[in-house]
Length: 473
Image (tube, rainbow, N blue to C red; front, side):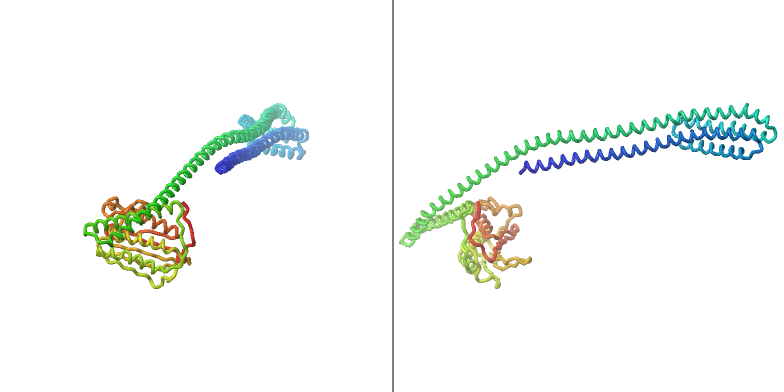
């Protein structure tokens, strides 16, 4: 069972580890997708810059052609308009290239081209256009001497910019491919690491856990065997005590019988007193044997309850009458109160109920020096709609029980105080037997007590009684 549970936990942990690896790889692949998008955008910008630079060459050539047409025929307006359009296109493409590029070298070249085009080239072109209306020959000389070198300088800067832009495109493509390759390799390497680590770690954990589980199973089996041996020993002890107690009771009854016979003969006062002491001691010893026999039967699982119809009032009255003389000798007021709603007939074991009440009432009389002892029997109903129960309460004004001793007084051979044995006598078996019998009858027993004020022992038993049952050891 433990092996299966632990193996299940290991499998769950291994699955979580692999799941974590898959999630990490998915995150990396998503990052790869984002990196590819960024690289593609960078490549697109580089291509746009290169296209703009290429357009500049065409713009400058168109501008030169339009200006040449104007010099051939100054009266043609078409050449002037074409020249102006070429200038506008060149300015637009140059501005776009400056805005899109991210390389400092290309930006520097384009900036110098921009300054040269708007400065020297534009100035010469304006002078040529103005001279073309007044002196065509002078305009042509200015065109050849100054405009053509300025235009060639523009084209030279354009060629340099185009070379750098082409390098930027190639670099962007290479960076995008390298980024994608690196991210992809890292994702697969991470997944492989998680798989290998998960398999190796899982195997090691499974081996270790199985080893520990096997050891735990062996220890559990040894403990169970030791417990069974202890239970068998306890059961054998209880059976031995039951047999010995039973064998001792027979000669005890003989001693009591012959002592009673001798007490009825003519004896001197000294002889009568001695035999009376013998009888009292023998009766006390027989009562102790009966207690030991009952306790050993309960522990050995040999005590069987009867299921008979009886009157609980009669049982309680009989016990009160039995202890009435002893209470009177101590000057105690002994009272009994049975509630009117207690049914006249219940189903259960009257002998064991009598024994429980007798043990509780006997203790109450024993440990009360002054005051009173009261027995109250009531019928209680379960507020949750359950079956009714018989509630017996034995209250006294005796020595009381301290809070730290209330939990142990129902254990065998235990009294509330060790000094009580010297003062009051007894073995501490009465309450242990009462508690065992109450539990056997499916009831409940507890105590309420204050030191120096008194104690009240409570017993509740199902009114329907209990069918024959045996308490397992």
